[in-house]
Image (tube, rainbow, N blue to C red; front, side, top):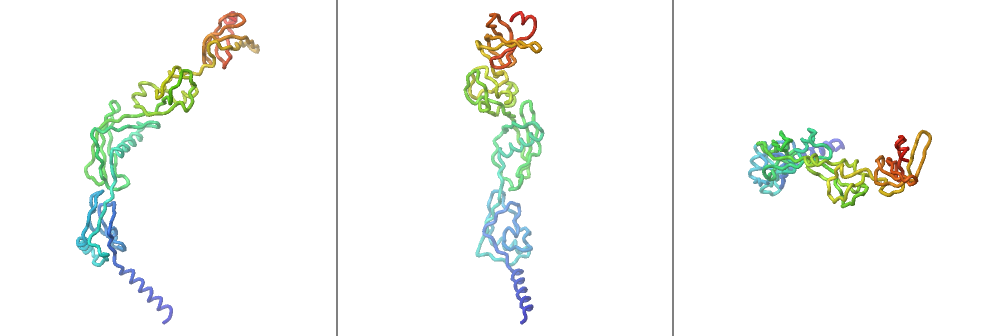
Length: 314
C-alpha cells in the first residue's frame, strides 16, 4: 500500500472517531443563566451545546436533576447517546449576586454624584426607612440598577426605585440622606500660640448642614497660622480660631524704621503689644520715650508713616 492511501485511511478513522465521540455527563454544573444548556450539562456537547435542557434553579440555590429527567430532556432535542459515567443524578448550582444596603447606597451615591449634588470631599449616608434584608439576584455584571431617585434637600428625604436582576417586581425604598463633608479638625490638644503644621490638621466627615452652620476653614488657610486659644483634639477649625502668627510680642525690642524718599532713619524701640506682619502695634521710642503707632514689617522690625503727626511723635 502506498503512503497516500494509508494517510487517507488514518484521516478517515480520526474524523469518524471525533464525529461520533459521545457527550459526557458532568457530575456538577455551575451556571449563572436562567437556563441549563446541553453545553452546561455535558462535556463534548458538539453542535447541540447551545440547546436548552431545563430551567435553572433560583439564584443562590442548588437543584438535583435525576438521570431519568436528563435522558428524557436530551431525547427531546435528538441527543440519544451520551456517557453517564455511572452517575444517577447531576447537581446544578445557580450562581448568585447579593444585593444589600451597601450596594443600594452606592447606587444612590453614584446618582447624586452624577447630578453634582455631592462633589470631591463629600459623601452621603443613606438611612433606609426599613431594614433591607440581603436580596439574592442573578449573577450578572449589574445585579441592581437605580431606575429613579427623588431627593428633597430641605429635609433629606428620598424615594428610590431599583430593578433587581432576576426579580420581576421593582424594589421601592424610602428614607433619608445625610450629606457629609470633609472638614479640618485639630489632631491633638495644642496651646494658644501654636503655629499649625500639616500634621496638626486632620480631615474628618461631618454633616454638611452642621459644617455650613458652624463654618469651617479651608485647610490651606490653616497651615502656618497661629491658634488664638488653647484648643482640644477633634475640634472643628473655624477661620476665627487662627490668625497670622505674631512676629512681635509685648516688650520685644524692635528697630523702628522711618522712610522718606531715599532717606531711611532707624531708632530703637520696645513693643507695647503683639502683632502679626502688616498689623498695627504701639511701640516706645527708647530715645524720646514717646509712644508711637507703627506697622510690623518682620520679626523685630516696625515702620512708621511719614505724616507730620508721626514725625512730631518721634
